[in-house]
Amino acid sequence: MTTDPRREFVESLLGGDSEKAISFIHPECVTRHPPTLPYGGDLMGPEGYRQLQDALWSTFDLDLEKTDVRYVDDDHVLVRFWATFIHKVTRKTAKMTVAEIYRFEDGMCVEQDNYYKSPELVTALILEAQRSVDVGKA
Image (tube, rainbow, N blue to C red; front, side, top):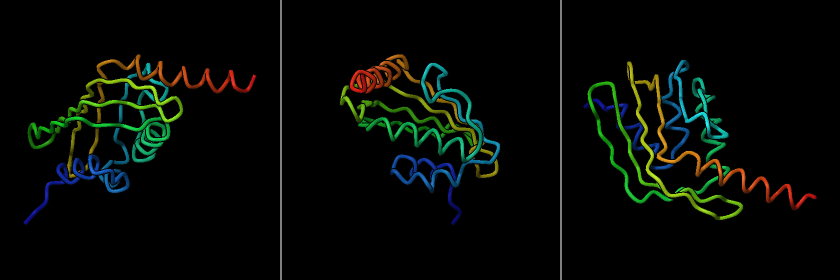
């Protein structure tokens, strides 16, 4: 029996096993998040993916209400989820859908595009928390 690396990747990602998920990221994989986010832009390879995960998880708790996974063809996976981003400092929230498209070649993720319904809300949560910290230092 052969296993589908796309399914293993998605299961580890949704199951919170970041290290296993990272093992499916090709060294030349480009991970793209909206550039308006403080952690947005293009990141390369497993290290870039790890930086993104660290930035996201150190800032937010994420409450996933619903997840829809589609294995579109032999190379692509679409993951859409309804999420509440909860800022770890202020506990303020932003609720939205996020869609992630993954492209695989030879069992490795070579490209990832992430689309937030309202990235400006996530950015606002981060900036507000930074202002709170800055005011506290003054």
